[in-house]
Every structure is written in structure tokens, then in C-alpha cells.
Length: 131
Image (cartoon, rainbow, N blue to C red; front, side):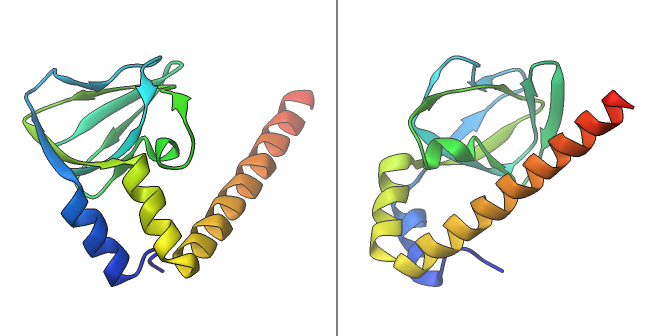
């Protein structure tokens, strides 16, 4: 299920900007002020946080919490090859949600589901450690 409708996606596409990176270029660093999320358009990025690491490729959304709340980046994202991203500013994303209440509700429900699943995963991991 898509969280945003076609009109909202068009608004994001029109208001967003593309950025290009070379191998080793840093998209953002842990501790940076976060004011945007990024969709990987081409190439791959290593996203590292507290010793954990994922590789994000085309279509992946990186730094998505910054679309919702003002924060410091908890992770560092580095290009693993020539890559490009689409930068979505939090201010634009919030305007889109204000103009599409149904999308805002779907996003709220998706975040609630993810948060509930994360809490469940943490409890299960804690139980295994206690055994």
C-alpha cells in the first residue's frame, strides 16, 4: 500500500532536488542537523549507526525520521559508488501532508505499526538475554 496518493507524490517530485555523489562522498554524518529525507535514485549508500550498518540502494528512503521531526542525525550515510538521491525537505513533506489528510492518517498508522513491532522485538530480545 502506498502511503501517499498521486497528487502528493507529484508535489514532492516537483519540490524536491536531485543531488549527485561520488564513491566515498558523505550524504550526512551522525550529529548533523536533519531537515530532509533522501530517496536513493541510483547507486548505493552505506548507512552506519552505532556499529550496525545497512546498504541502501535504488528506491530506499534514508533519514526518513527527519521528514517528521527536527532532530540530529543518528547515523552516517556514505556513497559506495557513483550515486544520486532525491532530497525531500521536511517543510515540503509537511505541506504535502497538510494538503492530504488521508495520507497523513496512513503515515500515522504505519508509524504506529512500526513502533509497536519495534517495541515487541525489543521485549523479545530482552527476554532471550534474561534466559
